Structure formats: C-alpha cells, structure tokens
Image (cartoon, rainbow, N blue to C red):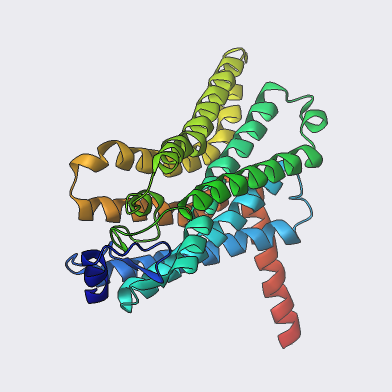
Length: 323
C-alpha cells in the first residue's frame, strides 16, 4: 500500500498493475461465520448438480429436449459455484486479498459468463414449456434435440462474446487511482471506476449488459407465461388447467429464485448499507446453483422416479455382491 501511495504522489500511472486488492468483506463483523455458510452452500450445490447430471446421463428415458436444457442448467450451476465460492473463501478466510491482473480478468470473465448463462438457460426452459403447453400435439415435431442444442450453443457463444467485450474494454484502462476493488470479487463496476482515462465505453457496457442478461430474458419469460395463461384459459376443464400449470411450477420457482433477489438488490442497493449490499449480492449469486437441483428433483416426477430407480438398483447390486 505504501508503494501505491508513493506512486500516486509522484504522478505515476498504473497502466497494468501487478495486482488488485479485493476488499469487499474486510471489516464486516463475524464474517467468518458467513464463509462457513458459503462452504455449506458450495458443497450442496456441487453434490446436487452433479447428482442431477448423473441421473440425466444414466437414464435413457430422460433424453428429451427439455432435459438437455436441464442438464445444461445443472452444468452451468456447477461451474458457477466452482468458479466463485472457492476463490471468495480463499480470498477472505485465508487473507489472500491480492489477486494478479490477469487472474482478476479471468475471474471476472468466468463469473459473469456463468451468471449470464443461468439466465439464458431459463429462457430455453421457458421456450420448451411454452411449446409443450401451446402445441401439445405438435411438440415432438416443433421442439427437437437439434433445436434445443442450437439454442444452447447460440446462448453460450453470445454470452462468451459479450463477456469478451466487457473484459476487453477494461484492458484499455489505466488504473492510476487505486488497485483496491470494493467488492467480493473482480466486479466490473468497481473496477472500471478506478480507471483514469475515458471510461465511457465501460460505463455504456455496464448499463447495457444488465439489460441483455437480466432484462431481455425476464421479459421473454414473462411474455411466454402470458401466452401460456392465454392458452390455458381456452382449456375446457379446471383439472386440465391445473395439470398443465403443474408442469411449469419447477421452472417458475427457478425464475423467482434467480430474478427476484438480484432485482431487489439492484433496485434497493443504493439505500442499504454497503456491507449489507455486498452480502446480499453474494447470496443472490450463490443460492440459485444450490436450490435449482433441489427444486427440479422435488418437483419433477420423472427425475424423482429415475433417482429412486437408480438408488434401488445400486442397493440391489450391493446386496447381491454381499451374498
């Protein structure tokens, strides 16, 4: 820190500093208990998403287009947890606040990429539900494996391109003000504000990216369920409406868990204490990967039946081996 102060006094500009300092959780009382909570969430997220991926891989009956999207969501959630939580715990629990320039950029890229893909996966699942309810007789013809795989591939390429632009614009900045990032990871907003040269492109992408990552997906999902509601209003019996709506409850739960907390934090983040905002924002990032597999296992009958069958087969094979 003394080196930074002396450099600033001598008007030395850091074009590419050797390191940044992550300071988000520093100074928050009893924060170590929160890291224990994060480790617990991380373990559940890894176990839950790995279990869902194993079940979908082993059960050949779960190879429909819908479950391709569910597998991709579990895969994204698993990578998201592994990219964020271990590094955050390492930084703040073991006091490794210094992070190299290149490592920080890579950290930001993967965190933003995987959070974006969580939203885009919900769009794919929403599209699948709309087609299943509005066109039940033609669903198999309209929604193919190739279509779902093409949508997933498009969103991956789009998210990667967007994140490359976002991170690439940061590499042009001279970080002469400070190297201290006021966040719990290498966050784009706190970082570009440290730049001394023109940050207009960074400010523009900071305003545009949330609209693309959160606004458009949420608008599509809301619009799709308006279409679902209109379609269900034409169904003759109440029982058929309830049966059709039950197929959407799992997806609606995922949407609520992902979008409601992060929207709340962004709307009211400026009026709450900075420490409370950092903790709230970190919770909105780590909770969905843990809860998504639990929701899908509990609310999807096919996955529950498949899981029971796999467990029964495993127990039977153990008994047979024992005797």
